[in-house]
Structures are given as structure tokens and as C-alpha cells.
Length: 126
Image (tube, rainbow, N blue to C red):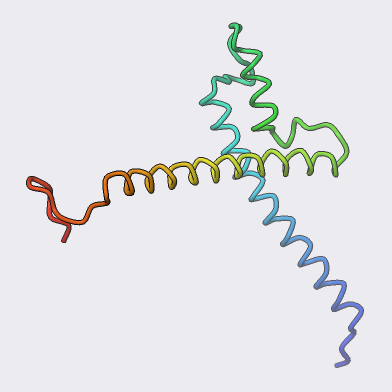
């Protein structure tokens, strides 16, 4: 039995491409669910926002921060840049919020000299 390297490469190539495609599609579905939940919490119902003075502002915000993959109609590279940019912005804002909470915690610790002993009436931490 002779090993045909060209056929082996072809089979491995198509298998790895389909595996990567399946993983990418799965990640895309999870991302769609997360972005849909965010849009719902902001006020979107069935693809529309209520007709209020804040409805257009909410639509603009969600279109920038939480775009759907299937609503982008530009070239594939532009779509990837829009999605990547919006997800990077989300990650940056979460990181900035976490850094702010860390700084606030450190400020409380420094202002009140930390928690160096058990106060009367506190639960024991063991």
C-alpha cells in the first residue's frame, strides 16, 4: 500500500478547514446570543426600539456597541473590522470598569488603614 501524500494533504486540509469553520460558527452563535441579550436589556423588542425620545439614541448605541453579524452588509473585511472593533471596545470598557473598582478598593483600604483586625459583631472568617 503506497501512501499518496497529495491526497492526504487534501483530506487533512478540508477536514481542518471544516473544523475551524464549525468552531468559528459556534463562537459566532454564542456572540449573537450575548449581543442579543445586551440589546434586549437596552430596550430592543423584535428588532425595534420604542418610539420615545431615547429610542433613536438607544438604536445608535446598540448599532455601534452591539451589532449583529447578519445585519452588516459591507465587505467581509469591513464586517470583521466592525465586529472586532465593537468587541474590543466592549472589552476595553469592562477592563476600565474593573480598574476603576480596583482603584476604589485600594483607596478605601488606604483611607481606613485596611482591615487589620476583627471588629466586634463581625462573622469569623475561618
